[in-house]
Length: 480
Image (cartoon, rainbow, N blue to C red):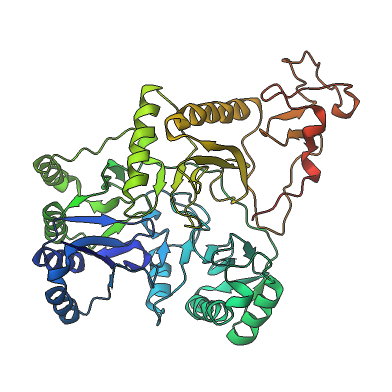
């Protein structure tokens, strides 16, 4: 019997326990047993086609927006889930997120992101219309990733918080009404787009005077019981992406009983419950035990992005995680994305991308920061059985680079070059650096030896020749 996938957006990535319970009751009535959460913090469940009519009536009565086996309206995602537990700095807090989301009077057809620049738990640029908090209170950078182009551009003006819903709506209208100019094209004229945006919006914008600095990436461990502000938060991840509906119903009931207002979904297809009182922690432990839920998976299993409801991608992830475990592989400061379909918008330090056949290409961002969007092809046409060998080697190269140099530099906006010390040269292939302050013990080069005066030189990591090195201060690498 044919199954239909029901998708419900959770704007901002959170929902009240009462509203979630209502959705779960409707899903249960329609025959669903499991709930999934998606990369864009949305909710999915599957039902038999014969149950659609009753489900539609229940959804209408509850005034719940939903889609049936479609994604015409992507969820608005936000980094609100990270607030107070993964970041404690900056001006962006709960009230600002909620005020902005409440002002949206349309259901976006393009992906919209609201992101705190102080965190790295939620991807910065996975949307088409990305608002990134600046260091100025209530002002945001606006980055547009034109649909199906991969081209990322930064607006030269900052957007005020109250103007975000209007700007998002107008930007979407311009793109969708002018697809010949801004949709699935590699030669997008961003200046024309901004001119049209400013003309139609009439918003009071503030010029960008300081470029966005991406924070060094790290993925916090988002599972288990964790203490903060004299309370606990609980993170729950499922290896098969399936949350038993009965478990979620009991979790909602306990939230309501213990006065926890909201449940958060994450871009890692997990959930987080904040504000657990010490006195209530044992009750949560009882529920976890009742449903046999493990909340301490290995870190190298948690740092993966996979397309939603993609069994092939999930099977490959399980294979690679198993092989990573056997190799006792360290993956701290890295995250991986598996792309079975082109142009899915998934982000990662390392991308495993299926080609037109059954083989895979391996790419990575030039600085291994998943938010930089500046990808380098590492290897092509790799058989699935050989992927782990090459990925393990790539991880080793990353840590070699990291130990031989300062931490990788984050790439800023497309129109801005990297800024580093001019005395440092960098290998264009593997990013190993030659700094005359240290010399190169592998090649028996003493300290203070100028790179340009070396007659011959081979990269100590990948053996690239001297001609494959660039003066870091003059590199003009951009986001693409």
